[in-house]
Length: 227
Image (tube, one colour):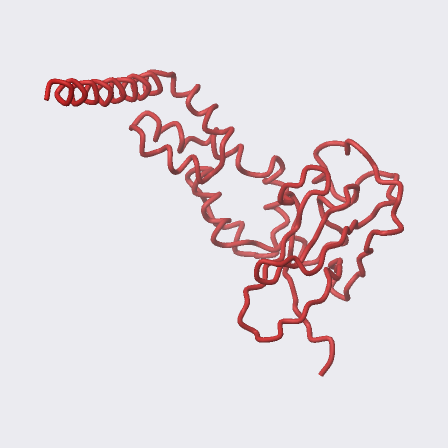
């Protein structure tokens, strides 16, 4: 009986100690300068910034600041927005960078009248694209838009010079330019016999093995091969 009472008290002390440590951590975060909190949040993601807003009033204010949401927008977002194909977009006004980010997330805009002669992200680095049907990957290949480009990037969206340039292009799929000016690459083909599986298409970095980012994808079109 004495042992059971001892164990119960020991467990209560552990729980109390854990709560005290959590409280101390929360107080410590809340005591940081708002600018410091904003810097930390800006290094996360928009979803994380929304989640952390629930911690306290101070953190909420920092997470909603223009400094944080400016870092979530493209570095040249003003130049991009000035090229919007929507004539009504220029008349819109936004009270904060967060509001602008939220609007663009729900209302994507076309730029350069919906026509482009290139895209950011594929020019130098080969990219892995694949088709997944159900749990099985059925097709995978490497693609590159402009491997032989030795001059200036076709668009100023290239923020940094590439770490490496591919020299063996024989196995890479090349794009075809469509009538509307967009570049098109065939990912592969698949056969869904019963039509009841989910189809997943993904673009991956070849070097890092992470999801590809930093380019504009107008859409994915699935076409029948015959019939």
